[in-house]
Image 1 (cartoon, rainbow, N blue to C red):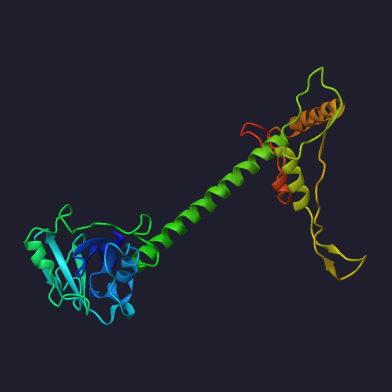
Image 2: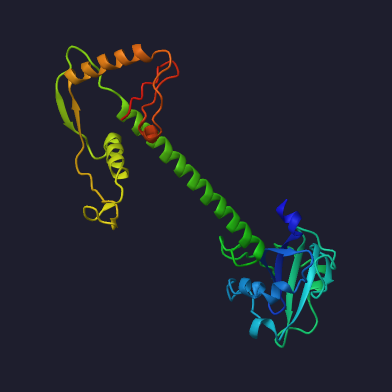
Length: 296
């Protein structure tokens, strides 16, 4: 769809070496329908592709960007049917369609003056398996480099941008899910049984709860006055959290649950009004629970 909107066409490009009478594949080229065929010569694409082919296969045209050479371009209908195209005309002017095959040929001092391509074609010698014919594409992986033409470059940039956006989106979602998981683990109260004992335990630094409490402390840091009654404010302190300990105290847990039950009895119909400034510390509750402003 993008190619149709931009009026771009894909041409399969080959090159005929008049010195060694060999035909080689150069690859694919995206071109605007209004651009002349010689754009492949002007941007150096044809010669760049030819330089990738071993010297024993073809003889390269000399001169700066082929300026000293007269270039011919043939449209290939079949192995025996060819038509000479005008390289000054556009794709539309040459009646070319997307997917058509074109063959470039350089005519210069070391080349024969008259093209041998039609004669070889009529003689049936331009089939891939006959004598003197060598179909060798450029090295694999270089057929569509980013700088070959603007279509591929723009498409590559678009795809890379989409991948980058998706990667960022996935990373943000993963970070959000991890933060929610850490919050739920930190908000979970210890299980109270008759066997629960007083316990002070240091969390491992790789623990999600360690990460949660460390970030909670660091985010609570704000700017402060450099001195008492000073008008100058210092930047927030940069804390390094080295240890996080959890305390399980059965007596305090029982007192907490008793007070929680008392508050629920008093507020079971209306619940407690939310405290906006502390919403980020609000413990998650179910829809059936009475909101009692339990904060972490």
